[in-house]
Amino acid sequence: MYISTYEELAAFCGRARGFAAVAIDTEFLRERTYHAKLCLVQVATPEECAVIDPLAIEDLAPLADLMVDVDTLKVFHACSQDMEVLNHALGVCPTPIFDTQVAAGFLGERAQCSYHNLVHSFCDVSLPKTESLTDWSRRPLTPQQVEYAIDDVRYLIDAYRVIESKLHSLGRTAWVHDEIRPLADPAHYRSDPRSAFKRVKRVNSCTRRQLAVARELAAWREQRAETRDIPRKWIMSDEVLLALCKRAPKTVEDFRAVRGTEQLSVRDVEVALDAIGRGRRCPVENLPSIGRTHRTPAPELESVIDLMYALIRLVSDRSGVATSLIISRDGLLDYIDHPQRSPLREGWRFELVGTLIDDLLRGDIGLTVKDGALEIL
Image (cartoon, rainbow, N blue to C red; front, top):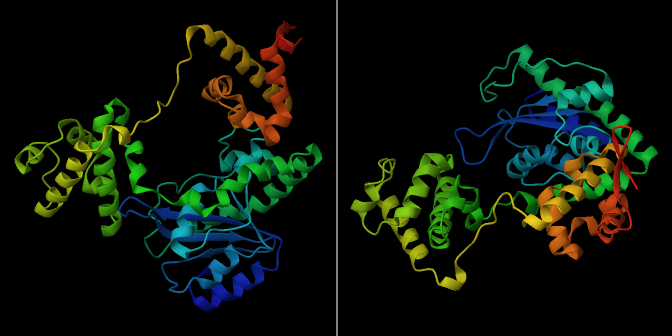
């Protein structure tokens, strides 16, 4: 079903709200705008599939009502981008939700299991992948494009039912809901312009003073791009921003000497120079720092981390819970430094592995190799 009028949308959403769960997916573009442009919303109930055209329907209130209907679970696969786009386009954050990618990681699948692999594993269906580079904003859509879009939700309810049953039999339903809960928080999708500098490529090569300039300049770029609704790189690329942070120009001439600033207006250059100046004048006690993406443990701890990670891998293999869902190597280093703050001290992670890690570090258990495989002593 292709829905392009308010009346059709209201009727379909009314029917969808009669079900305990519906599957949701979106198609969007973000190449030419700051906020992703919502181009399609696919919704599947146990009885029908619909492709909703938000470019043709001015009032999407019935869809927004469905998204926040507490009696209808919204099932996504890898929901973060869909949630972000729907939150911006509809003004509401879907709830309650279920993410099959997260859930599959508790059932022996890789933590980043693709939708195609999910459908193959849990529905024994192989899907084609032929429209991945489609411009979903162009109209009219071809029948092949509509069919491809529908495939992204057609089997999701069936997969969800299989996954839910397996989780229930293993007693892991609450584990998955705990892991998914933060994804339904609208705050998860709000961006802070003052934190945008942390996402600038190679920003970790900057000194703390240069980071202060980066914080101010990246915040200005973020606000300017959002105001004009264009990609931030159209205002200024990361490479140019980084060069300006390291040079910290004080005059228009010095600023313009950086290649890639030619497209900026006189006013933009003035405001950017003000931002750079604020970074240069930032008090020492307020200089930002940025954590490294990978921490190197002290030499005496490397073997301890290796042993802890081997135990995590062993628990992962036995339980079917993806290793990366449990904890990273950096997380294990954090555990050694501050065990009480670690995720391993709470919820399903503690139930699964928390006491084992404590026993290992106390020397109460050990690891050995038996028949070519790790075993707990």
